Length: 351
Image (cartoon, rainbow, N blue to C red; front, side, top):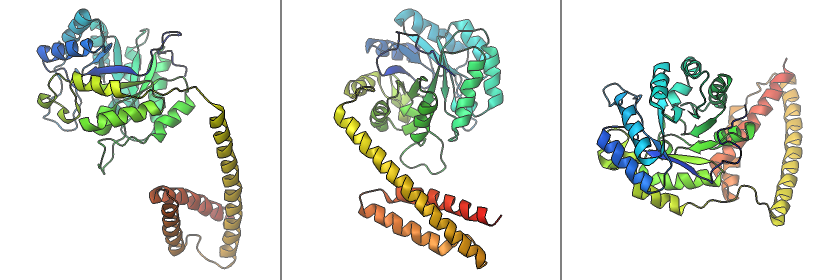
């Protein structure tokens, strides 16, 4: 899949910013928000027309009527306008209204049937499509949704990283799990990735630090919920910010170069390569010893899994990592993976 979301020579400087209210509520609210954002130099406006809600009874969007407000935004401000689609009917209505950019939401991305329906409705149309990650941390499902759109002939595709749902909600509304979009970038290097700090954080005070982290990771853009009066928003009020606050956040962002590499950095990377080579050698040695242990267990009719020993290793390594200035939970995750491979190799000896 080779995205041409930004035609050659037209890629904007980072970050590309898409901003606007979570929901289009009234004509006055949409136009006030749009005018304020246009005054701040925002080029891309967003507003939800159809709003999938977790539970029934909440505000589910104004529907088709709101598309006329987006057309008005486009005519008056010159901004390109975007909204979410979840069905073929949504697609037809948006195309009829001249909406510039469509995005597919997290719940829809998780449903291949729904994505295929949207892809079929877009056949023969040249329009940019943004695809949010599915609610679960499933990279293949995310890529699969984009491939369905691509196979329908649409090559102006970008990914939106909006975080992943978790039962255990602590700091974030949706866990960032940055390693997943990083792996997406590795697999599809030319695919633009846009961060959605509003949905990751769920709280307006987290938008700035999440936006900065996205820029530090080389993301191409940000999609941020901005409302003329956030406290009175009909949906997701806690994660929306005023255009003034948005402008303040954007002006404070540090945009670092993606490509510059100095000689000292090359030397440090060489040291990293040496460390990795040493780690691989030690891991190979550890696995050889694990297989010897597996042979001993087989000969003495012992079970492969020794729970007490496993717990002892995790606790000791976690504490050692902490003493060496590393996060103990990270060290435990590393040793869980190492132990899983050791167990797999010992089980192979029993076949």
